[in-house]
Amino acid sequence: MSPDDPAVTDVLQRAMVARIATLSRNRRPNINPLYFVCVDGNIHLGTSDRTLAAFNIEANPDVAILFNVEGDPDDRRVLRIRGRATVRTDPGLERSYVRRAIRKYFMSWRGLTNTLRNARLVPVMHRYHASGEKGRACVVDVIPEYAEWLTAPPRAVSSTGQNER
Image (cartoon, rainbow, N blue to C red):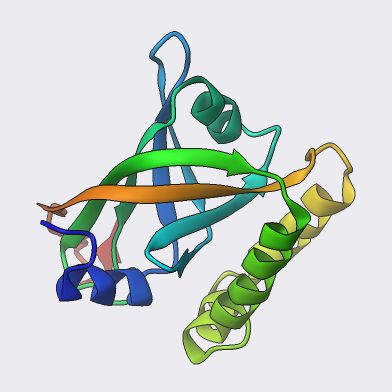
């Protein structure tokens, strides 16, 4: 399937988190959940140059990214995109990413809903960003090469009728 297929575009517009899978020099896998935006067919993920994802991409640029629509429990589709990634630290790209991420994650109805749903994490995020140990901000720029659909297992339902994860 092509990364510019309308169904792929729909999931990329509705998904709020990307889970990027990378491999270390020793071929050890790692998965990181990151915020993302789509720009001109590429996927931009925000992180820092000290994260395991950034280190691994420097060693091996082949990545896989998983997306699903978290707000729709009936949609069990998982989109997997494979591509080549580059860690970019240019300030212009970082500013562009931040502007787009703010619009997506804080200035939209979905973003506001997501922020309120995860309000308990705000103090943790604040401590992390204030620590100064996070390294230099960077953007992981992924050029998609291939897209495919996977199916998530059905969610378990507890005896109280609540969905469990």
